[in-house]
Image (cartoon, rainbow, N blue to C red):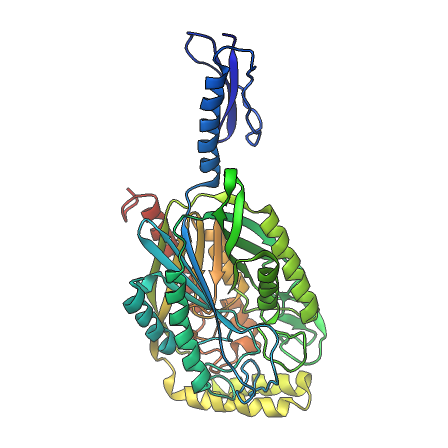
Length: 505
């Protein structure tokens, strides 16, 4: 029998093997393209070649499995959040109104299971919501599904075009809609768990970009103020913008190693979710509209996780244009996504303590009044009293200690961090850069809402996001403390995944 040659793929190199009849394998180490698809150099005229073909194809199938990686069972549910035109819309300084709706406001749940460990990721098409509501929903989930509360992450997409679910600025939560949201969170997880696939799905990932949808919106103005609304006389941005658009896709296993149908897609980006295609309607805005469009086109359930967007807005594009660009970026990322192993699922949730800031009433009044008079115009006269009233209510609470949640969830080698605030992009990038996981992404407004969390430099610069009110009341430095404690949580998760003890051994 003549020689049979095969190329074997190992991490980082390809080796050619040669076997002669009755001779031991001779390994001729020749580094080659690690993405080269192997083929056996055999001839049908060679005795015994059929056996080697069988061996080769058995090996190739195991290789395909290794490339695809270990799978995870997936269940999804997308429930409609019923709203009507009488409900006040959150997102502005005063309560808004809407007549009709575009797209669907939803509670989307994705439940993942591997080796008895279940994770539930819920996204809500609302502005934000506090733990007073969400903690009760998580308790109901734990009681009815057996999924631990520490394994449930609830993220708000931050659409500014849905009924109110919290007290902020000049309005209160709508009690009927808020209870509908709470019930939908629980039912969505229950249904997703019930619909969980019998067979493992494969996990695909790609880190895309959407660099043109959003920018740092805290622009320095010509008088040293920080832009919020009103006239624009920009000098320069005062912080970074994060264009990353990671896509986590779960597919059924197809025939012959081919990717099967989409079951679920999680995607993440870091721009405020503001804008409607039609004027004056309720809407999930451009992220939700893009995801729902691709569901119709590609199948599966799409779920948007809002990133660290406390300091970033879309200042230039229409909602229609932003929807098109996010749709295109998602489609491209899915086309380029590659299989990754999911050897384990992990989630950790920890309490985090913080304090209501102390503030100087005279300085706060001067900051709001000065900006509104110079930059906002006549509408500013209606804005100033709203901030005065919020400070009046917060004054007796100065220095009060409170508690919220931080969370780290890991799917294979991709980490999702839950923080309970409108998180400044600089802080989100700090987490990404310090994380032990190469792929780490922020889910802001997760499990609670404690207002904006700016970095210390932003506090010094001033601007709407640091004016004291229900939208921003944590003491300076809270954002940096969240970063530090999240990094500790990620490091602990990484040690657990690596099978080491708390001291690193």
